[in-house]
Amino acid sequence: MAAMCLFLALQGSARAETCVGGKFCVWTGTSYTGSELNFSCSAGTGVNFELLSAQNHCGVNVRIGWFDGVNTNWKACLAPGGLRPEPGRFNTVTPNGC
Image 1 (cartoon, rainbow, N blue to C red):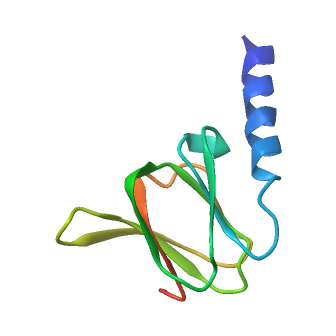
Image 2 (image 1 turned 120 degrees about the horizontal axis):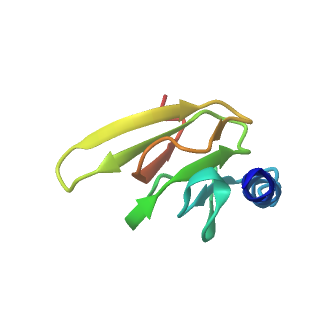
Image 3 (image 1 turned 60 degrees about the vertical axis):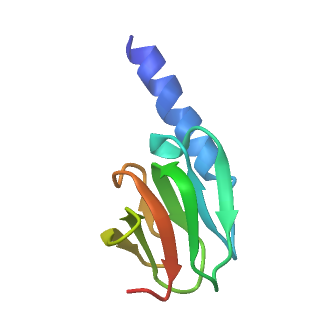
């Protein structure tokens, strides 16, 4: 069991390493698993599905939150180089937003 946990932890770390300079990367699973999407560091983005982990390789702070159609519940502000393996669900990304 411990070997399986170590394997899954290493797999998540390896996936996070695919996110490099000049982009804000998000994953559909926690700990950098699932499908990876890369967003621009200059424009806000919203998606119609839930994202569960994030990594900031922009040169600016990036705010993440959950937009419910009316209001946004902001979850975290990621400084450049910031990692959030499990910030809670989010669907909105705003560079320079915090």
